[in-house]
Amino acid sequence: MTNKPDFMIFSGTANLPLADKVANYLGRPLNKIDIRHFPDGETFCQVQEGVRGQDVFIIQSGSPQPNEAYMELFVMMDAIKRGSADRITAVLPYYGYARQDRKDQPRVPITARLIANLLTTAGADRVLTMDLHANQIQGFFNIPLDHLHAEPVILKYIRDQHWSNPIVVAPDTGGAKTAYGYSRKLACGLAIVAKQRTGDSTVDAFSVVGDVKDCDVIMIDDMTATGGTLSAAAKLCREHGARSVHAFVSHFPLTAKGEERLMNETQLDELVVTDSIPLRPGFDPAKLPFKLTQLSVAPLIGEAIKRIHCDESVNDLFNHE
Image (cartoon, rainbow, N blue to C red; front, side, top):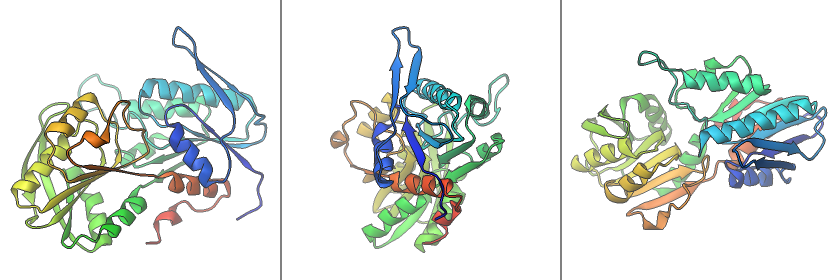
């Protein structure tokens, strides 16, 4: 690695456990910042260490409570920018508002673009994020953006299971390209579920393109909040004779409706998520009728931070299987 001055890592309150793991991977404690919320809801922060001339990374997931999480991040960046930091990288393990990435109805916002503008205005010189809901969100930024994928973490877990007859299934047509990439790396078959969304949290899955009979289904998606897509796709795979169904999602912004559906309707054997978002408060995975596994992306994010600081390739993290 090149000889460069050290860097600093701060964290908001949205996902402190992940930030601590990233800091541990990098062999250092998180740098000190005081974040408080006044009785009227206003956010205040004070950076408790000098940042002049420093390369600063701020870790903050855009969920849960995305409005509060983003406001914290904006306030933190403004404070650090006014403290004369040399560069600020906003590290967003989960990019909140990513699903509002297009104008598909009259008089609606493109909020994913608005967040990109606000991040830049608040002081971000660079953004590091993971598994965007739509790749084109990268084009909303006029600053450098590094886009990580949880794929290496998920692939390692899948390979360790040694399923005898695996098949990768895209739970909707939008995920076909990602599922195809997984199927090639796992050297197994591919199937696609055709679906129609009938509401904000309801999905009608009506056909499977491909043969899942007697297969161990590996379902790949970028996120689940209400569990609608995964539940409908899992049910259809079961009806077509799947031996087992294992769902893998990068982000898990679970809602109350999603928790209810997972408890009562989902025909999964296992749901595997990452820690890009903390588990919903009060949610008890032990009560689920299937296995919930959480994988950590802290080493992936930590390695990316190290490489960005040293001006090394982040893409190389995904070029070696």
